[in-house]
Each structure stands twice: as structure tokens, then as C-alpha cells.
Amino acid sequence: MTAAKLAVCRWGIYSDQFASAETLCASVKAQLNAPVRLNSPYAHSPPTTDPALDSALPGLDSINQYAFRALHDALADRDSAMLNRAGLLLLSTWGPMDSTASFLDSMLEAQGRFASPRLFTRSVYSTVASHAAIYFGIHGPCETLTHGMWPICSVLDRAADMLASRRVDHVIACWADQSSKIAEDLCRRGVAALNRHEFARFTSDETGYGSVALLLKRPQEASPSDVLLEILDTNTVKFPAPVTLNIHNFPTDGAVHLAVALAAAGIGSGELPIYFTETDPRGRSRFVHMTPQA
Image (spheres, one colour):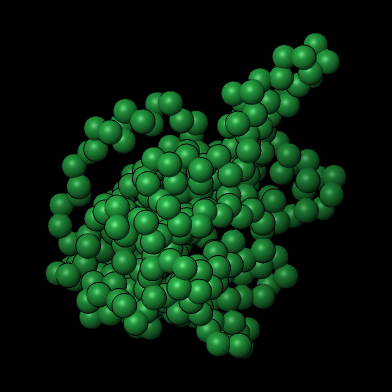
């Protein structure tokens, strides 16, 4: 099977640990003890706050806020012509968990006569992608994914397919999950009653939250500041992470580790080549090979 290849134009992050791509890059730079490449999008000072975004956020629930902040960074240089030919892929494992639980509570009142339409619209998994497409003006295909198998690589695979189809010239890939006491309790029950030990990492006192977004395009159209990605399938070789940061666990935290590897590749220092590794519950691994364009 031919390995999928992509170019990352820009990326954004908002999490409980990193408020922006600049914040994460600073942590990676400190560990690598290296200067940022001059042509890196993050070699300069952080962008100023956006009043329009700040006014839109209070009306959104937490998972939307995380995704909007990450998308805002990834789309800092957006224009309407680009967004007319851009698709959006969003993956969330827990989705708007708290809104879903609140809607189910409203259904139990008075035999469902007062089920909340507002909470229902917030509980639908595709609400995050829908709100983002409307706010940012994304006019291409808009898809929401939710599954636990290869949450990072499967989105990159799908992005490569969309770009190969020529229906779009850019794909915006986004991962987002909120923290949720309800979800943590369900994970504890799953570990205790169903022996689903893979859920144990979501039951600690340091469960994280956040979102990562990538702006992707075809590799042959890459610019000098872009990072090239190649998604590999192999179980015969193990590649060490370029940087080890203590990332808090949450369902799509793999996207944060992907951003760490992207930051290391963008800084252009340390041991090359740089790989991001994704491992499934059965111990099988997939790798994303990263190469700075220049």
C-alpha cells in the first residue's frame, strides 16, 4: 500500500497545558536547546487576540471553545478563496459529553415532555464541526469522525484521500475533547466491571483537555516553511520520540504528541528523522515521518 503523504502549512493548539502553538514551541525549544528556524511560522511573536473570536467564545460550550481556538491559530492566514476549496475533518472521542448528559437528564423529566432542544443541538457530535464551518467560512466537505482506533492516523489518511480526489486544495484536520467527570466515572466503571484497562489512563487526577488543528495540502504544493508528513505502517522498527513532554491524558491527546513532533521538525534541530508514533490497544504501531521542507 502506498504511504499517504501530506504537507502541514500551519497548525494550532489549545489545551490545559498549551494556550497556543507558540507556547508549545517554547517548551520544545527549551528541551532541544535550539533556535527556531527563521522561516518557521512560529519564529515570530504570538499573534494578537482577535476581538471577534473573543466575543464568539462565551456562547459556545467548552469543546467548541477549544476547537475554535486551535482552528483560529491554524487558519491565521486564511482567506475566502482558500476556504472555498477547503474541507474540514473533526475527530472527537467523547464529544460534547456534558451537553449529552444534560439533554438525557431533560428527557427524564415529565416523561420527556420538556426535553431541551437547545441541549439536543449541543449534544450532537457534529455540532463542533458545523459551528466551526459556519464561523470560519469553510465551504468544502465537512466530516465528523468518532472512534478509538487510530484516531490520529485515520484522520490523516482521510485528509490524504480528500486531497487526492481534487475536490479540495486544503484540508483542516482537527481533534478536540473536553474534560468530563461523567466520562471519567464511566471509564472507572469500564475498568472495574468490564476489564477495559485501556480506559484507566482517563481516571487520574490530571485528566487533560484540548484541541489541535492542522492546515494540510498536497505535498507537491508545499512551501519552504511547511513540514512534510508520510504515514507509515510497520511493526518491525521502533522510533523514539524527538521530545518527551508530560502530556496530560485525554482521548485525543495523541494529537498533542503529534504537535510536539511537528514543533521539533519545525524548529529543525535534534535527531533526524523525526517520527510520531501511534499505538493501538493491541500493541500495533503506525508512524508519521516528518521532514522540514527547508
